[in-house]
Image 1 (cartoon, rainbow, N blue to C red):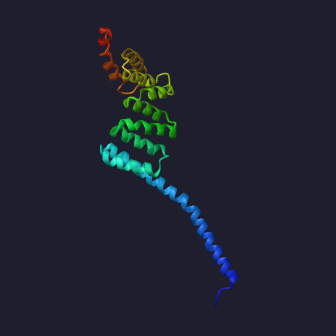
Image 2: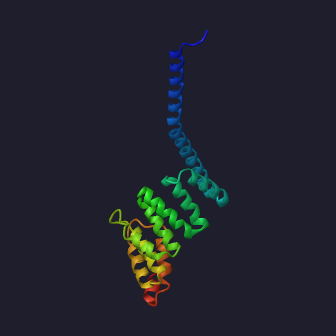
Image 3: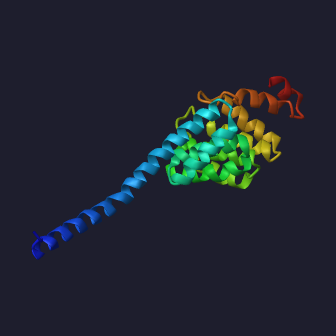
Length: 194
């Protein structure tokens, strides 16, 4: 028995409604799947990086970045891989990570990467944004000392490093860095004090 024309129209409208609904849901669902896969790849990249397997870390981080380039965690992972593979390229990814996250730790990594890549004007510009978290925070002074040393300004580097090591919260390598710097001083008392 043939279908009534009104039933045919209702079936066509129903099929069209289902197709439109599926089309509208497909894009967000695909985006969620890509984001989930990118997060998993970034986690794999970090695991490979921790194991010292730079090649696989790079491969996983790059793929994660291609899937989700606006995720701060993923750009952070790429920047960490570049810290080892190509420090000069790490600067761009730390800058992107800081732009996405606004996190103080990412700013510190950006400044360190800029110093390591000898992009000293960028390091100085970003260092101006870094404020101490507390009166005992020696990180800004330590980075100022590293920047001065990279600029071949040893007297200022020694001054900033000596102020940094007097703070309660300093990076582990700050004391060692200070001792190294004092050995470059022309003043024998400074060398002995270090």
